[in-house]
Amino acid sequence: MDRIRIVGGNELHGVIPISGAKNAALPLMIASLLTDDTLTLENVPHLADVEQLIRILGNHGVDISVNGRRERQGESYARTIHFTCRNIVDTTAPYELVSKMRASFWVIGPLLAREGKARVSLPGGCAIGTRPVDLFIEGLQALSANIEIDSGYVNATAPAGGLIGARYTFPKVSVGATHVLMMAATLANGTTVLGNAAREPEVVDLANCLNAMGAKITGQGTATITIEGVRSLSGARHRVLPDRIETGTYAMAVAMTGGDVILEDTDMALLDTALEAIRRAGAEITETNSGIRVVRNGAGIKPVDIVTDPFPGFPTDLQAQFMGLMTMAKGTSHITETIFENRFMHVQELARLGAKISLSGQTAKIEGVSRLKGAPVMATDLRASVSLVIAGLAAEGETMVSRVYHLDRGFERLEEKLTRCGAHVERVSD
Ligand code: UD1
Image (cartoon, rainbow, N blue to C red; front, side):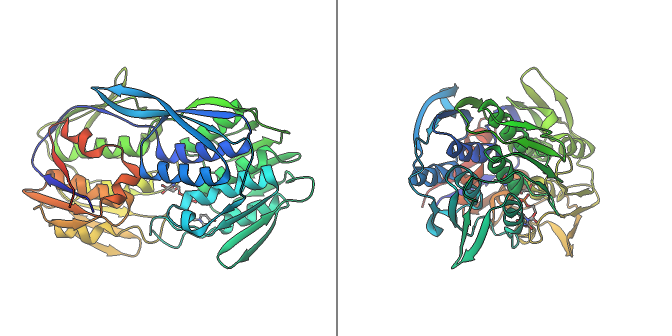
């Protein structure tokens, strides 16, 4: 199993190209199940989760061809992928495939909308809390689906004439359930109004792509999304939006080590709240023609308190990285996690590097230390693992991060991107 070896202490200087967003690419790929025409996605990141979803979609009958790459310094950073699902050949998403990645559960929406039935295994994915699927079930039932849970599978069927548009208000904001209900409602009879919908940029990206395919969606990016059902959708060509989590992660890495880096092909508007927190911690952040410039010279890191929240709040997917940054702040900071109940697994690993963190319920208290010292650490989930990389970049000596497959799920060419900016990061294959 691969590990990442980091020798800390170097500043970061240079340019980091930001990839297409994993969390946008996954639902966009799933949307290809809604049409018998070709959906072409540009700027798709090369990640383990994307490859896994390609396998899952192939199982349902999606024909997939990859061509065209965005080249940079001789390396490809993005792919254009064509998805064509002439016929859905299987409406079952089996446990062996779904258990590896929670987002694959989302195929339930398009399968039900197009074929009138779906049998999808209850999901797995990152071990960050119980992550139930009650909102998906309630929402699909509101569209008149009949749902039964049997032997670990959700069996869903639509009425004979197809799903029926309805008004449904989510009791809690859910990105995934918003994606699924939006996709299912595009082909329903009549109009659907989703209240308390997720406002994340990835939801907006999916809605824009669905509209390019002929859907009639308005209100994306607000808490109320209206979907007027249409008879069928066509193909489209759509570019996946930049990864705001990757953007924020590298911005925090620069804030941690010091230096001067341009984050290319990304957009400040995608992560205002997180960038504001990084600024308050002491980095200078400015907009450039091609993206964002992050600079921290000399001055130390200041403590900043944050609370995670649905968009436009501070993203839970950047919480672990921000904690990494705060471990070396000059003072005490507090980080409160409100989205997932078990998303502090990085705390004990950061402690191995010398961080001083105590937990009380959903709040972590971080007393900044003047130095971290490299150590062997273990990645526990996708975002937690990259917080260890950030801490390792500033720690004295060698940090060896094991279970790197977590990183490969969500960060494209991480070690290359950091090495080009002067970091000592290498992949070690055993
Ligand atoms: C997505 C992101 C993930 C991010 C999360 C929150 C993808 C592929 N993943 O995950 O990176 O951390 O949004 O921004 O886009 N919940 C329920 N019942 C449900 C569904 C969700 O109680 O039926 C709860 C979850 O347990 C969690 C909260 O709602 O506490 C938010 O989860 P949700 O927004 O659904 O996260 P995901 O879509 O799984």
